[in-house]
Amino acid sequence: MRLIWLALIYGIPIFMLCHWAWDLLARDAKSPLARVLAAFHVAVAVRLFVVYAMQVLPIQWAPKLLRWGFSPAGLIVAVLAFLLYLRIMPERDRVARWGWAAYFLFIPAAAIALLPVHSFMYSVFQRQGLWVKPLSTTHSELMGIAILIYVAILAAGLAYLRSRTSHPNVRGRLTGVLWATLVLFASNAIFGVVLPGSHTPWMPPFANMAGFVLWAVIVRLTVRRYMLVPSRVERYHRLFEQNPAIMVLTDTNGVVIDLNESAVELLGSPRHLSDILPEERRSQDWTEIQKALTQDTRMHRTDQRILGLGDDLRVVTMKADSIFLGERAYWAFLLHDITGLRAQKDLAEQMALKDPLTDLGNARAFRQAFETLAAGPLEGAAILFLDLDNFKDINDSLGHLVGDSVIQEVGRRLTNVFRPEDLVTRFGGDEFVVLLRRISAHHTEDILERVMHEFTAPVQIDGMPPVAVRASIGLSRFPEDGIDPELVLNRADQAMYDAKRAGKNQYRVFQQPEASSS
Image 1 (spheres, rainbow, N blue to C red):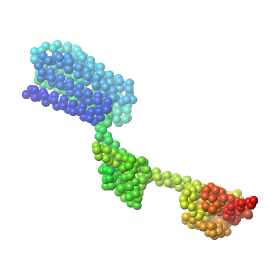
Image 2 (cartoon, one colour; image 1 turned 30 degrees about the vertical axis):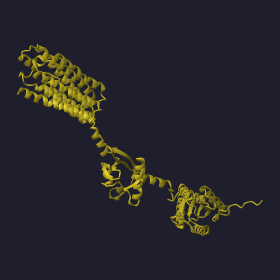
Image 3 (cartoon, rainbow, N blue to C red; image 1 turned 60 degrees about the vertical axis):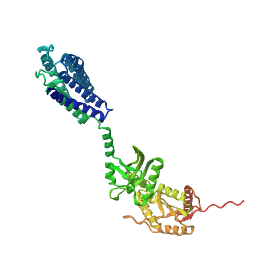
Image 4 (cartoon, helix red, strand yellow; image 1 turned 90 degrees about the vertical axis):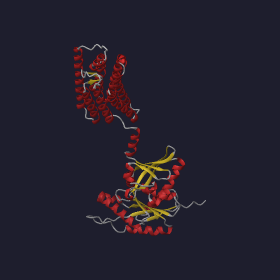
């Protein structure tokens, strides 16, 4: 009955300590903190086993177990505790950290070396007929006082460090260590040094064992909560679920296998990846994605329009790779929602192509449109270059505000004259350029007459007398006058200056100079 009782009393905490050590290594075997804490658990379990062995093995083995098992195991526990607390203490308080950790090494080690046998062991050995010389009462009392001072200084130091920091993780570490220290003292045990207690020969040292186990439990909870990272499986699960990027896993047919939280928030729960593609381009886009992943096992980052929740059209960057889990292939898609960024970019591009005063296109917009036209199939087009006559006089006599109003009104009139497919732009100052698309040569005369007619009526400005505005216009044709955009523009400009030299308020069509006769 005694052996069964002892086996249960010692076996349960020994098993739990070994199980916790294995669990720590399984969670993250590469963490130095996990290794030290696991080794500490094993060392405590070994020391408890030695205590158990001294009670169930023949009494003749007791001196060897004391000399080669009990005290060395205690020293190993002290060293491991020293290493453990070096890592638990706040890193920014390095001097204080080494100071407090030194208490855990030297004082317990000294106590273990001086008191290899406590009062419980005295009673066991004496009842078995083995004589062991006990320490003097004075020596025991001094050691008890030293232990009390040690714990008091350590607790005060930990409490002081805790009051100096506001970081929740650091405060949590120090709180756990403080509780562990107080529990160790309250259980009447410090690394196997137990004050006088029970004299019943077959009862285990409950204070010693409770101190070890409770101390290990509190330190374990502290480290696990504030310092240890989750297991590898849990880390990757969190990385997948809590990643702000949209992550979708499909099989090689596009059937959705898994989505993370960001994907569910944006896409809902599509059954097939093609379900998120716009219907008008679904077949084409999905074919391109399949082709890239089948041939290259990778789809490089590309902009893609998709359907979000409620068929909301979104723009994402999409990247995909083929991955293998075992022998089975999957496709992993990584998406980033750039709808807001794309809208800002489009707005910035539009603003870069706008004239702020008239809201017409600017010179950059004209050149961009003309280069696109010239790069395509050749078709009849024309450039109209318009410059207001004597506009400087309007600015000087009536002011720049009136001049700006005149420019705005001219822009409105030109917009009303031309077709929607034509592009009216303001080059700056009082110059306007119009790109006329798909127009034949015999229609240009009518257009020029209509434009000149717009300048017969004066500009009406509130609070001001009517302002007469006149313009000189030059026109060149594409591709008759050239296929280079800048050349055609310069020839329209040249025709406009011909109109000014001819007396202003009229138009001219560019004419190729006749070849000189030989």
